[in-house]
Length: 564
Image (tube, rainbow, N blue to C red):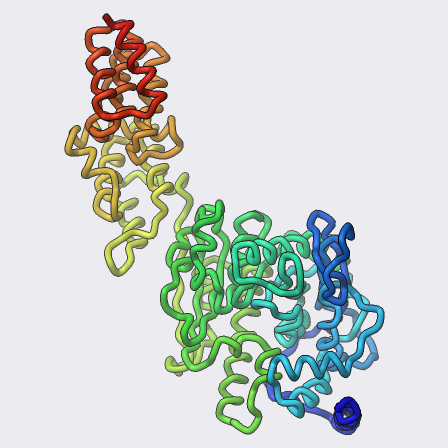
């Protein structure tokens, strides 16, 4: 059996040599309009010493007591000086797979290819032909240092390689961009889980790349974009939320939409963090249920939908290695789409990072090349709103309401963040613009689900609610008229000598929470601080009637004794 395998691979590599002797063409003949710059490529095997790893460079578990920092393979495509050297073949990218968890001094290329064919079920002849396709980049070419170039940090799809979109990377580098990528590697081994820790791991890898790129000689670190495909389009959301230095976001079938809970349950679901332009590229099956796009209130957002292509068509690696060259219609469709996607991304980046275009310029320029065939490509966009601090400066309340109405979805529910609307109401109240506060509060009541208004208005009037809202917001950094919020404000007033005012809040809390022993206990405390023991005692007794926990029971009993 072993001899048969050896003979098979001798034949395979003879075939590689024969194929390589001829000019090979890839199945992905995108015919991209490359830019004026020579493309250079470098790869590094680095370590993030702030994180550990559980396997060695060969994927074997570490021995007991052995320690290892997290390995990160960093791949960089960049504008380079013209050089009379032979460009890389696709095989030069492919063998990077052997070094994804650390540089291996010796590896068997035959085994690498054999394992890939067995695990990925790719056609051997298809793979061998693609491995011999000449690419654009020149290995270790001298960087073009006559100027600095914008940076794109890229996050690949689940468990994928750093070079999964090498054709796109070479295209962008030729137009004046530094592209940086690393493989999608799991927290402790090569295996990447689809989990919160997996997403966080990739986000931190991308942040590590960003830090390392500061050392690259022609990288303009004042102009940075993040891009990601599939899982990388969720990890890069976390990265952008944590890094205000990022100027643009790109998601290609981004998993932020299908795994939105990974984001919503994180500390970073704050849309005021997302104010920079964003580009979404979606394929069939990924064009509906777009919660992240819908909630991007402050970002100029652009979307390209491609209903006739599949998820994997957005990465050159998958088209090259898994496409069927015999199906010319499919090949032509994939090629057309890839060329279109590359152009959209380039135009978007040029307008954001080079031209600093406004929304209308971006919309016109990015979508100018859109085909008239709307069955193949559809586009949409929306202009980001100004910040809350700027919205509140509008003098006419109706102008603000008109602006907020643009955030209503098809069900009449607003995507404007509730926390930001509350801040807007608070800022207007600080400016004593009562008409504006009233309009905003009524809009709040009408355009959100499960708001506090109805339950509060059962007990106090609308004007009284408007008066209480600003203080509750100020004391609690938000206001939903919850038990804790109302109780907190009541105690602050009570302890600062404003006993009568505090009682309004304590009493309101007992009305909002009539079954809460704590609400009545705290109302009793409000009276107790004012030395009104006659009114304090019945509230402590009411607390006991409602069955408090042992702590409140003991305190209420002790205070009742004092009130005799």
